[in-house]
Structures are given as C-alpha cells and as structure tokens.
Amino acid sequence: MQRYFVKASASNNTFILNEEDHHHIMKVMRMSMGDQIICVDPSGRSALCEIAEITDEQVAANIVQWREETSELPVFVTIASGLPKGDKLEWIIQKGTEMGAYEFVPFAAARSVVKWEEKKAVKKVERWQKIAKEAAEQAHRNHVPDVVNPMGLKVLLEKSKQYDHKLVAFEDESRNGELSVFSSTLKRMTQGESLLMVFGPEGGLSDREISMLKENDFLVCGLGPRILRTETAPLYALAAISYHFELLR
Image (cartoon, rainbow, N blue to C red; front, side, top):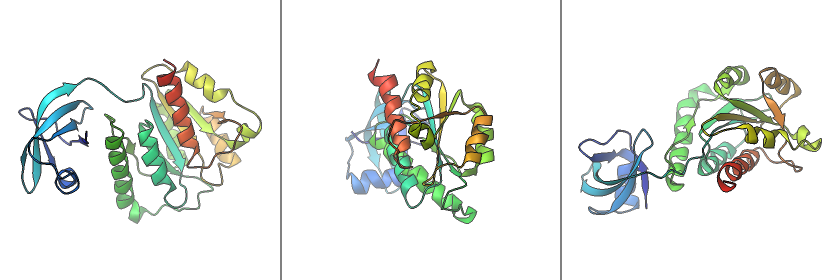
C-alpha cells in the first residue's frame, strides 16, 4: 500500500496531502475516492486512511485506523560520508534510507574530489532530502532521514559530541586484520542509543583526519577483510547493524 509522509498532523480525523504527494496520487498512482493509503504524521505515527476528496490542489484522506507497528531500527544511526564523486552520495542516501539510517551528514574531506559550492547548496540538499523521502515511503518507514547541509571536518567533530557512540571506518584497519571494534561497539549499544559512523571519500581519509577523529573519541574500525568502495561501506555497516539488532533477536 502506498505510503505518504504528511507535513501536518490530522485535523478532524483527516490528513491533507498537497504538492508532490497530490501529484503522485493523481498522476502516477491514478487513485480515486475510496482508495486506501498509509499516512505518516510529523511525529512518526502511521494510519490507514481512505481518500475522501480530491481537488485540483489537494487530497483529503480520512483516518480509518491508527497502526502501531514500526519498521525503524532500535538504534539511531547517522552516516557521515566524505563527499564522493558523481551521484554516489545519492545512492548512499537512497539505499541507506531503505536500510534504516536515521540521518546523513555529508562532509568535505581532504581527499574529496568534489568541492562543495554554497550557491548550489539549497537545490542539492533539497534533492537529497527528496530522495530520502521517496526511499522512506518505499521502505515503509515511519521516519524520513534528515540530510544535513555539507560541513567541514571541524564542524562534524563539534556535532559528534551529541552521539553516544562514534566510529570511523578505515581501510588500513581492515588490512591489519582489525575485526573487533565494530562488533564490540554494537554489543555495547542498547535500544535508543545513537551511533555516528564516518566514512571517507574515494581516496579515503588522511592520517591527519584519522588523528583528529581519534582525539575526539572516535574508535577506528575495520569492516571485514575486503576493501569496500565509499558507496558500499555505509551499506555494509547498516546491514550488519540490522542483522545484529533485528535478526538476532
């Protein structure tokens, strides 16, 4: 069943959908009155709804039944990616959202080939946020991950103070056979805690960046014996987190 994240809470037991959601219902799904959809309100609650009215500007959907289930990970995982080339970040956001990431933080790493242009910032972040929203709907999530404006490493380090656990994936640790830090961190985590994981761009993180991260209480971890691409490593980590917290229960 199609899912939509509505921008406002229900009024008089009715959700109002407009703009892109209105277009999707009308032109893509070609729905009509009486069809059922799932609406997720700003607090993350979802409800089975029935379309009651369709106009040229909006769709009104009446609540049939609130739903209690959730498909969210029991821990909050933020993916911090060194700005990669091309559309790799879009891939990370789309697939990472499907796999349960709570937030995405792009950052300008020393070896990032892509240089962030502030004049393009608003449209870029809007596109990334749209990708996250569509992926969250497809994956039947109750939360749309926030994609924050790209930042420098120093700002990321300041932001990192709000997380319960902090890891940085570093290929040299994998080469050296380090396989325990990631696993032991997951074992220490409890439901509701937060984890910030940092991944480098195509060229990896520099020794200076690793030193700065360590000085700010990040643990350096490997992700198995194989060297993963910048767009693969976050997905590997999310899959492992899902397995640990959801499939091993």
